[in-house]
Length: 272
Image (cartoon, rainbow, N blue to C red; front, side, top):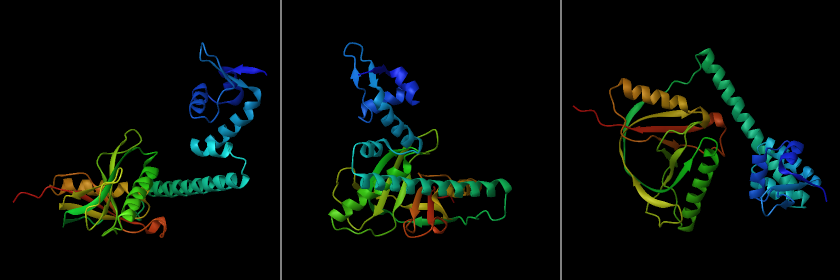
């Protein structure tokens, strides 16, 4: 059996040594032999086919756990289903990018069609919610939001409770390409739920908020934030807490262009 060291195998497969070490740790592509004294990894030439499959699937952004499942089964129907599901995710991501490019073109050309935002001040009542927190980043936020609301839905189902209002997220810090941070996913409820794992009950404070409604895809909501912060400053108000996004309709039942999201930003009452 011919073995090649990890550096040579990296050159053969166009996978970095760092990536090969990662794939070893998670069991996706384990070396044929590891020297017990030095810990150096060696691979069989025949492993290049599996390495190429991993490289291709990673190039189309398939998660590592799904690649491991695909390469670890002989069930061709399961493989086809996994590939089709990932293809749908890629198509959805492409559609998102196309919407963002069209939106960017609108901003650059300063077209009159840029959505105006009507900002109002209103008083909101305290709300009892079932909540869960996630520490997330821009790359992972979509999956974390889905997982968080999934956990809340599961806990509500276990206790036979129904939501009493639309779900919302409190953004406790700015999350961008360089910065991760905590978000709190909330569902209004009529009675306090028992704690279940990461799910807990709490009262979200009420008070004065500056608010506006964003019409359209979630990824274009930054303009609503710009408008709100500018309006708050221009009208002599002070921010009193983190912003909230309240989701007024269901992204599974309406097109992205029809989504409605109310953004609320707590403010201090003006001194008279």
